[in-house]
Length: 378
Ligand SMILES: *Cc1c(COP(=O)(O)O)cnc(C)c1O
Image 1: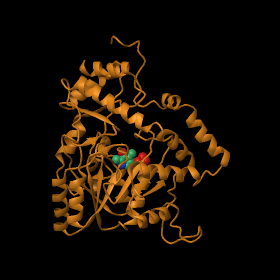
Image 2: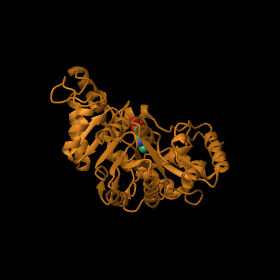
Image 3: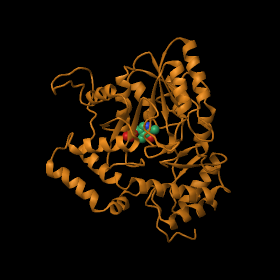
Image 4: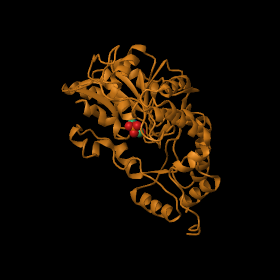
């Protein structure tokens, strides 16, 4: 406890972030208060164009959250009762929640023990098992770029094509990452983003977007985000939802996008410092070959849950925050367990016992990064 005089380090520091962003942020927000077009104002369309440009996608549709983005994409494919949606067991709850809300069944797939990404071999086996059981119709695969690194997209595309399944990329944690030199955002037929404040490109509230190269699907997404409207506002063509991106969030995100490249570089520098400082003491995250992570989360692996508990306690004493993403694989969550077919998912279960996330945000100072490293090494 040599450093109790030091102030606790923040896991996420939105106040310091606002200070760093400076006047540009206030100007963007003030402009919205001036024009008062709080719903579908010009900032929404400006942001959509800039996000599409960032990754080279043809279309971008701003929506109310990453969860609603997933829902709109699945509604557009008419995914519902009797359908199976394949997704990793080790991910955030929203990925599994949406198929269930639509009456479909999530089918959990295990992940790679080193990269934590969905395991294509197990995915193939799960699809075949569902076909053989004959109860559900396989419809879609959701690839999740967990913690900011890419899912195995090449393999997922091959499987989706062979099996005739829709491929959706849940890019909630990975917008800003690259694969083979290209920004993520065009790996699947549709890609969903989240702007929840803790994501690499986070707003100051909820928000999300859908990217696609298919103009017909983009039109469908636009209709679905506004109550299924047609060419005029009072023509209702289909059952939709209130899923629009708020103008104020778009304004915040436009201001933040100006700093996004620098923030990604800072996250990468912190990850490199952690790698170098920690690799002798704990298992540091494996890099997906050919990729640059967006570093939504920097997660280390301990030997077992007792070791993790002891480390968390020691970090706390030193004012170093840590978090567990995720303490339970989804098939073990009370809400999802009844929908799980009982398949063994040992890697997801093992990771949930041993994983620990360290702070990684652009506001961390060099001194704080050094403090985190020293505290983990003990
Ligand atoms: C955050 C997240 C979502 C949901 O995004 P919200 O904007 O919070 O609704 C979906 N999938 C993954 C993998 C996420 O991390």
